[in-house]
Length: 510
Image (cartoon, rainbow, N blue to C red; front, side, top):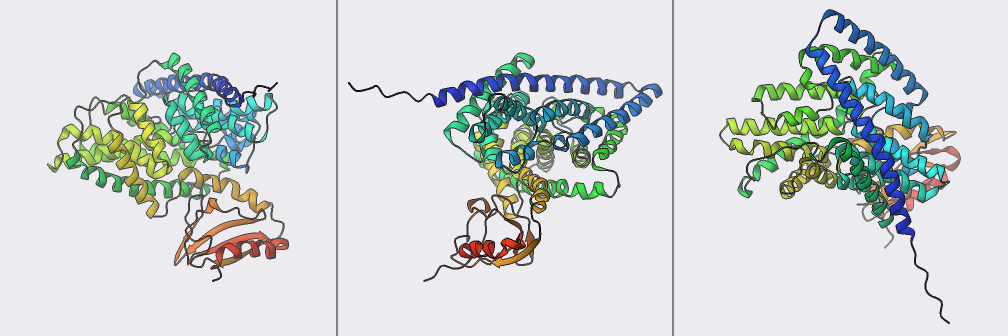
């Protein structure tokens, strides 16, 4: 008698796992988001009703808060920043953490730092909190390897979904930016987790989209040249944002404060800013929503961009636990406002379309900086609550992405990750040496991305020289004939490593 073929329920089990992780992560992130909003509202109230006693109290509490956060960061350095590079490193196998040590410290430090009014986003920390929940679930169940990575990734998707009420964008962000893998098991588990987290978050915050902006008229196709020009502007300013962000640790090093104590600087500098312009405090959610009621004139918008750009650098560059996700979207909205108002003042754009450009620019700026256009398109579609913008969103995101890519810009989170893992990788080399190899036309590496090649275990690609240009490599850097690779390895393995790489860098024999 023929036995019935057993049914493979692996995917079903992972979907259930995703739902459980998503529900738990959704609750953690929703509570995180709620506490930040309450604290930020309280701080804005204090700044709007200042007295000498209140100002002195804010200064004292800010110093205490800064010292407390410094203690948490010193205990667990991987809670600093957004947390997204740390998750990428964990999924790539370069980093690993104690999930509980990350979870509670990131939660507490994030609420205090972001809720104080700094120009930091809650989304990156929410993603790290979600991934910590996923890792905790995996560790409790004794999972390792690929199963553990899938659970961490699904928790990350849940974190972004709960932070923005955007389950599709949360899933796509994990696939496009964090995991770099579109396998069915990964996306199904992540989607289930993101949906569960969104359902939990909706019970806290309701059904209204996070950035509910409404435009009056759809922009006609014959005016899409504005989208191309705006995309170029966003790509150029996105490159500026990335370069400034990556340069900030060197700027802060000039203070001669230890890294954990550098957070005191923005916590004190935000006080006069809060007294002067309390409405600008925070990650920027309220700034974006204010455009729905009134778009300022050109010069106030330009000043708003300068203030938010500079203080975003100061806030994130300090290493405080907080992200750049929402600050990037806010800057994109302001840039869209500046462009739209300028063109309207010049008589080249009907004012009714300014709001359209503000919405589109949020996606374009994130696409240029994060190099994740699909996430950008889905995120703004879900956050604004309209699917009518897909074509202009795609066109603007693609334009900004292309401009940044042509200028050699790296995905911001991948560039930040390389700075985290490089010291560890170099530390594993007992007697580090470096050598250079050119890439010849027709070689295997010609026109290949860095991540397409399995580099030898004992090697590290530290630089790519292209003519007079020197580039820090990242995963999607395309290698070209004529490039010179600068590689570090251990002296004991130099010969073997060189031999492996020479095979794919030299021209094939004819």
